[in-house]
Image (cartoon, rainbow, N blue to C red; front, side):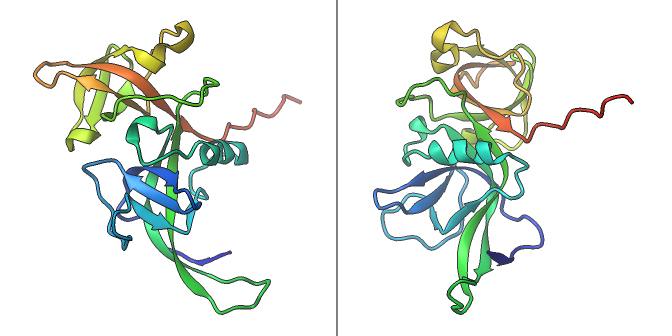
Length: 210
């Protein structure tokens, strides 16, 4: 049970979530981003007690889909992206009555998943871009290059994005894509081999006319 948390988000990053062989949970920000945390020597990312989706406005099924897809620290195998921040929370086990303890949680504000294609092994580029607009008229932020300002881009789908004969999405509004880009050209041409779609709780249908 969460009994105390931050009043406002701080230190927000784009990250992956993975588990080690013993079930330990870790959050790894996309480079060159970083998180300030205490970690064992040789560990990639920050160890957390819980990834909390309470602010992400998603369904229980969408959360279950994300947790089922947690992969390894290998960015090329990732199928889940989370946007959020670390927080220290105070928890109490009301069943045992033990004293409250402090834990480090990752508080998720946004969740992005790749399309499910029925395949276990899916490798993509480790260069990540945040996108809005359409594939022919996009604005992108090159996260992996450490850029802080968006630039105009054109996206061509390849690799996993064309799996099963798909032509890829025309709209890239509020997505993350992976791929290769030629930074010497403008608009920036991106050959994108995977995309991550924002997950949100469906809006309820409008009330029927009486």
